[in-house]
Length: 341
Ligand SMILES: Cc1ncc(COP(=O)(O)O)c(C=O)c1O
Image 1 (tube, protein in one colour):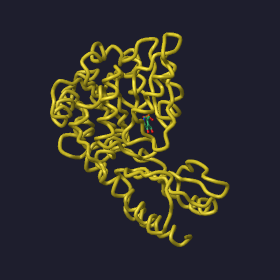
Image 2 (cartoon, helix red, strand yellow; image 1 turned 90 degrees about the vertical axis):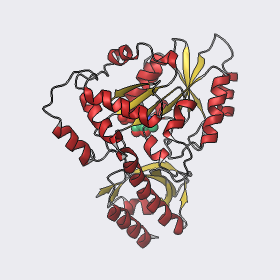
Image 3 (cartoon, protein in one colour; image 1 turned 45 degrees about the horizontal axis):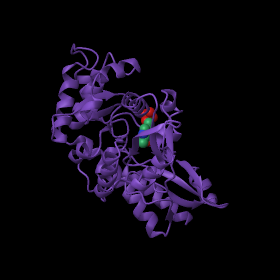
Image 4 (tube, helix red, strand yellow; image 1 turned 90 degrees about the horizontal axis):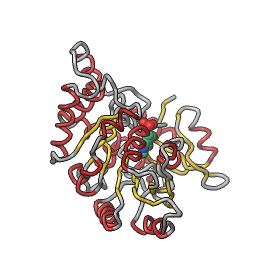
């Protein structure tokens, strides 16, 4: 059985494990004030090409989203998310549990547009309703699509004109930035969003996300928020060592490129056999539509999520590739598929 279920099925890239081993007995400060974390944060700022941002290392996506969003919002304020957004459907109401409603915008491709956000604003005109304040987007999105620079610029302009905060969930930012269709640079993001995170968990780290806060007014006391949410690790070095390894050279991007290349091979082969896709996804998650009978056959040798029913006889499945996906497994899957098709 080989799994295309997700990009966190394996542990960590060997280079990261090696760095953890080699530094194991070095004595360091706790709570993220160790040398590795400080250096990792400096490297991330260098890659961003700017020094005037705060970077915090946290352990997971849900934790980062709820710590950031609850810190950024006042009690009566709400977040806006695409209907497919992770905070809306897959985080156990974590944002709502901090007291902030998440307002949904129906989206077919996983992305938000100014028009969708505008409709939410129009539906919340006064103090008898929550006040929409933060726009949550993910890049790549939960269905593998990515934001083009122009789309993000338009959303950013709209948010600024309407005093909204723009927050990007970058659980799969590596895959988005390394997509063949991407025209955004990491260094563009501070100009376009108020805060975002760079996902490590799904891109070769054992765990870890690097939250970048760009807007000055959101920076104050953020370590207090992290600590209060139980997210300030005594052994914060574990995050620092991993992010230093990912950003010391180009490992972060190399790993994402590999994941995308594996997804690209799958996509190309499926397209050649006239398979249709649920959505256009130029990243490491693809959503081909298969007859249910074929899905049952594939499930004998491969693990993947059956994403949604398309009609009585067909469903879309989600295939995810990672930094660790073996090319021979991709080739094997394609061969098996061709036998059935
Ligand atoms: C876009 C996105 N954000 C956040 C998360 C949550 O991450 P975690 O499972 O580390 O809490 C995920 C997990 O799959 C995700 O896909």
